[in-house]
Length: 179
Image (tube, rainbow, N blue to C red; front, side, top):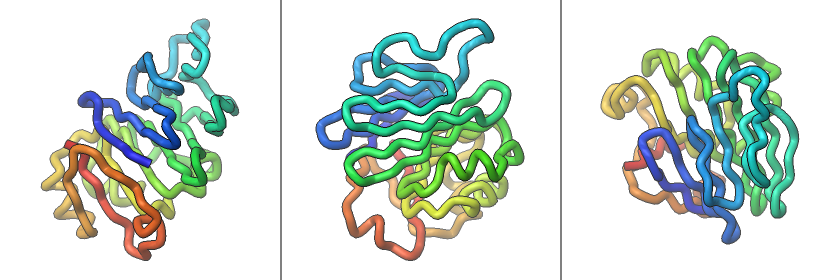
C-alpha cells in the first residue's frame, strides 16, 4: 500500500492497483473517491460510482468502506483493502470524537487525520484513542515541528509512504509527515 499527498488537504492511497482519493472535497478520477466534508442537507453524498461523502457501508472493487458521521460537517471512513485497514478521520475539534465513532473506525493499521481546530496536545489525545501503527496528519492547524515536540515518537517526512508488513508489527506507532 502506498500513500501520497495530492494536495494540501487530500491524499491518494494505492492498494492492489486501486486508487482511493480522500480529501476535504471529493476528488474524481480514482477507483474510489471519498469526501471528508459532508454535503449540504438535501444533497446526496453519492455523486458517481465509487464516490461517497455520506455515512454508510460501501463495497467498490473489493474495497470495503464504512462511513460514519463525525460532527456536523465531517464524515470519517474505515477502509479495508488488501488485508490492510485505514481510518480516515475528519473532525472539527478533537473532543467531538465519541466511542461509537471509534468503534466504526477500528481496528486500523493506518490513521489519517483531518483536524480543523485544536492543538498538538489535542492531536496527541486523539491519536491515543486508536491502535494504529502509522499516523498521518493530513490537514491540521499547527506545524509538524509543534507536533513533533508533543508526540515524541518515531517520525519520518516523505513524499510517498510505502506501507510494508514490518510497519504493521511495530509496538511503537510511527508518525509520517507527507510532503
